[in-house]
Length: 340
Image 1 (cartoon, rainbow, N blue to C red):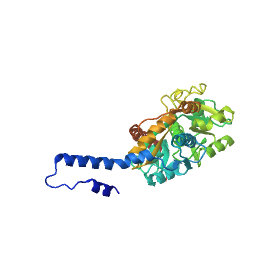
Image 2: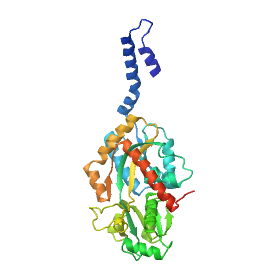
Image 3: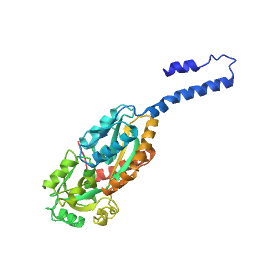
Image 4: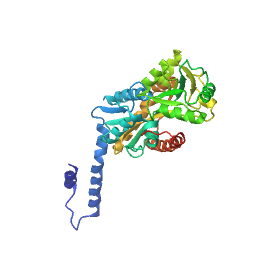
């Protein structure tokens, strides 16, 4: 269609054609060829959008994606269909999204595992977080909360470290799967504390917390929103937060850094799309995600659950992903974390 339009636009130039006529024609061609991208942005989205969560329902990624999907749906008047696709630390979902059409109708809530850690722990990863996706926007950072079953005779991070050193490999910690945020946070904690524990991966955060409540495992460190209710109910004991400062909403819960200076292992999340997604659509989504996440009700809701809004440009998010890949590759090497 565009070839025909350009042909129609071109005058029948001959050797006597003026420079002015040529430049006028060239300008028309440039304007015409720029139209498809602009039209895409103006018409997007013309149908519902699939928003992939790389983990089963119930965890922090699911909670965040549903919140943002609802907000974007209100903006665009379209449904952002939440699709939970767990497995392999989020890699199964990430691989599927990387292969999806680059048209803006498939998005993924990427996180520390899918976008930074998996590339180091899965030797046969079928996607490259640096090349398979275009970063759209960072979304939020979430404090992990170190919690134990009340039957474990420890009441502080220091007591937990002492207990683990006296009972090497006898403590079992749960996570939402290999390469999940909880897995990486606990590996970082064990590395910093110089202790050995046994990792028990589950198919998602919800079953990992269920077994912790039942006493099948003794502890975990996962997103605060997923466990703070159980802490308030007295079903779990909170020992420490993974951030560098205490939460205003939970001032009595210390940070792990108060015992292990400098320790930080927060979760982070951001939206990505398949590589090749039109820049105009990426820019539009970035603008609307930033507005949605900065709404006072969203900021307040996340703050109550130990999270903070964290938004920026696609370029800033891309640079952060690259930085995190390098950071966690070092830990993966030291802790010998590997998944075949």
